[in-house]
Length: 131
Image 1 (cartoon, rainbow, N blue to C red):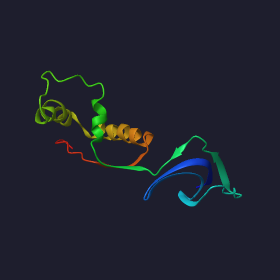
Image 2 (cartoon, one colour):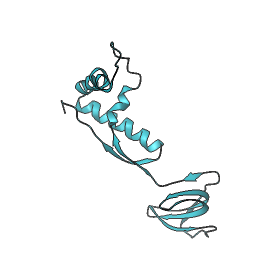
Image 3 (cartoon, rainbow, N blue to C red):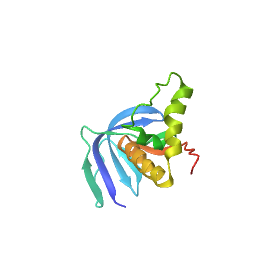
């Protein structure tokens, strides 16, 4: 794995909460240095991060990756009026239609969506009756 020097980044931290303009050195996938003007080392790949925001990966502790399959799904014949009916007319119908391959591809689609939005950790609450 390469070493990177991220120059002129706006870095957001959550513990404690802070926003700072600085450079970051990443080596073997870990932040090893942080400072206002870090000097490039011989093995650093320099990345200009001007006007870029860098923040830790987001954790989503409750998701249903198969819901990625609901995009473009037609509305149910009967309009749900409460949460139970949403489950009954939408989600449980989809649950019953899933097989192992469909679940696999829904996880790929949902995972790619998560990565694009900065989410690095997902906890999927999947419970299809067939699989």
